[in-house]
Length: 310
Picture 1: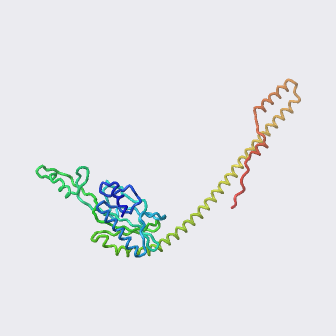
Picture 2: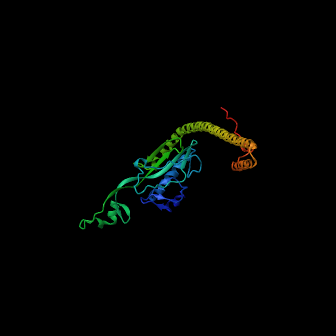
Picture 3: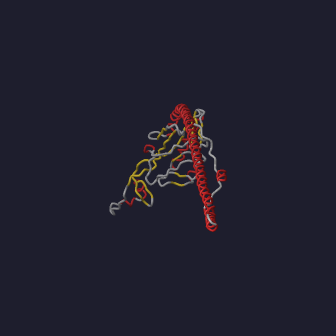
């Protein structure tokens, strides 16, 4: 109850719903007129559950729980098209019963009502007529266009849901005829019964999650092994290509050397000037055709990794 000041000291949406800046607060999505009563519902529900060894954790800091976001909630919380951003706490409000957690949200339902736009705000037609009766003067034929809007109804709803990602369940109690405070006995019994059902469902979900994790780990191990094998095969193929390049270069250099040796042998029978000119050209040709040492090339070659196992 001491956290209610954080609700009223924050912002207010155009349709009156509170939007506090602080987010570690009870899960109350309401307007200021119903704030105190909504907090009383949570407080009295906590007292009832405490007698049954249950407990409510406001802004639950325990891990593994997810707040179920509010949607239209079957039309009960459908808001104006101009109000799409609903405040939400950073952490869920959880009730723990028999080691099972159940999420709780108290929200104020909306209702369709005829409204008029006056002085920058939508007002109910009845309230606008009381505030400015002269606006509907038949003599001046002043006309204000009416539109149907969704507005807060001051009727509270309590939504209980499964905060476990793998278990889907939700139930909502409304103040259609009776207030939530008068429904607390039935709500407590229903939550206790649901906790007994959720327990085995959570255990089964955890078992399935463990199996999926195990299967995922096995598939990942196989994929990793295949990837590593492909890297080894690629490395061996690259090493083979580089080795063949060294051999091809050596073969080309060998042919050139054989060619120059042949020219030198033929030059023996030539006269001095012609032979000198020929050998000079051989010398220039050898300078032009630079070649790497085959032994050095082989020493710089990267040998392949071992053949991968089948």
